[in-house]
Image (cartoon, rainbow, N blue to C red; front, side, top):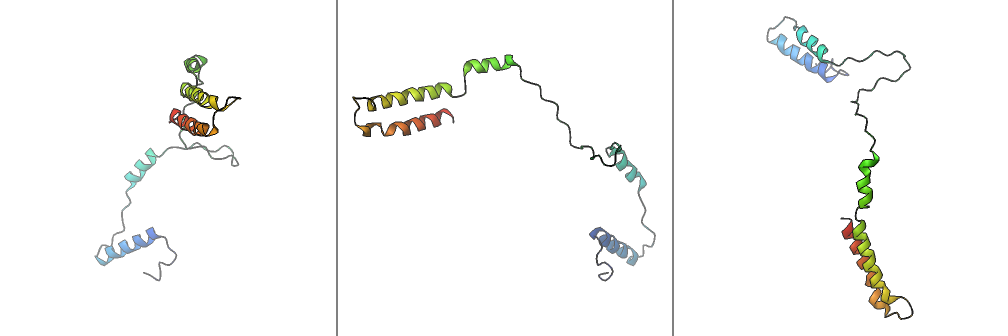
Length: 131
């Protein structure tokens, strides 16, 4: 079996081994072909349209998604009135940031060490707005 099976596909080798076992057991009749099962498989297989041009690409077999409907302006109106997500929170962060920097600017500026944490606090505030 090893000598004659070189280069053969696995299914052919398995069939030959199975057939040898049957012959060794005394079963000499050829295997029967179940035509009914083969015809049922052909009935359920999807039919493909024939090509009209040999140079044309094959038709798509992927399922087609329904076309998306365009969004109307009326559906967007409430969103536009409410503003962007996090806009109110970001505005509050900006006003706190400005009030933190107010004593640090101008001719009556206090010590700059007091204003070092303003940018970090502003960044932390903005992160909370968009989480």
